[in-house]
Length: 114
Image 1 (cartoon, helix red, strand yellow):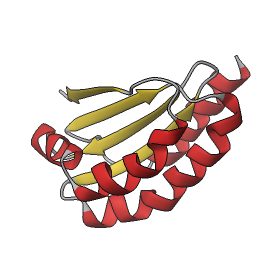
Image 2 (cartoon, helix red, strand yellow; image 1 turned 90 degrees about the vertical axis):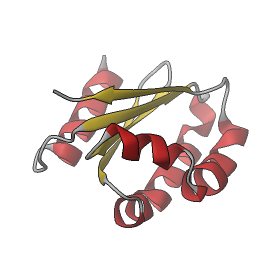
Image 3 (cartoon, one colour; image 1 turned 180 degrees about the vertical axis):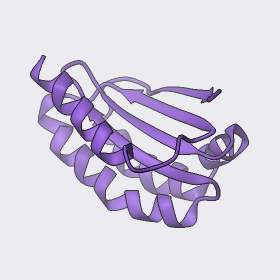
């Protein structure tokens, strides 16, 4: 329960002052507890480049839960969310560093906000 509350607090603080995005990209991956600190460092390293260089990027939140780690990205459109998944920043830089920490393949979902 504690980690759920921490995840909610992180997500709220990261997004509460921003307008609602038009689309969300949700990436969920199992990462062993011993590797979560390293995964969080990679998230922190690439948060600013994501927000400043990826077209349509509006917000990014890290949610650390007992079962997995989730990154919730906010975009202006679903098309920009899909394009990000093909970007060098995502495929080469972020996944390149995170992949050795994965305990399973990531689950990736895009949601259109109403």
